[in-house]
Image 1 (cartoon, rainbow, N blue to C red):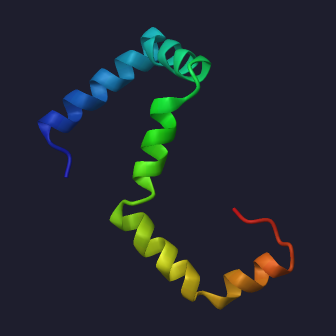
Image 2 (image 1 turned 180 degrees about the vertical axis):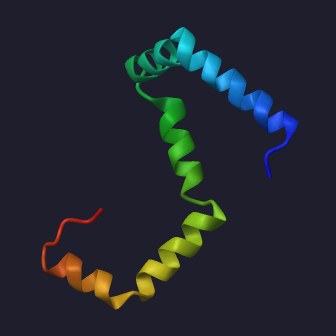
Amino acid sequence: VVTDATRQEMRKILAEVQSGEFARQWIAENKAGRGKFLAMREAAKEQPLETVGRELRGMMTFLKKRKEEGVPQE
């Protein structure tokens, strides 16, 4: 559900992109070794959506077959 607070946050993010602030922060993050980015990536792996997805993909035998055949994974 999109609330007024959600819209406000989206406007803030859009303004950061349009002003170039996001790009400046992204470049600085990469120059500094991507510490925040890598920490966020690790934290995201433990989100319920990701853990359930990992379990479900483990049950899908056709995915294992594609991997064994060398079919590029998306």
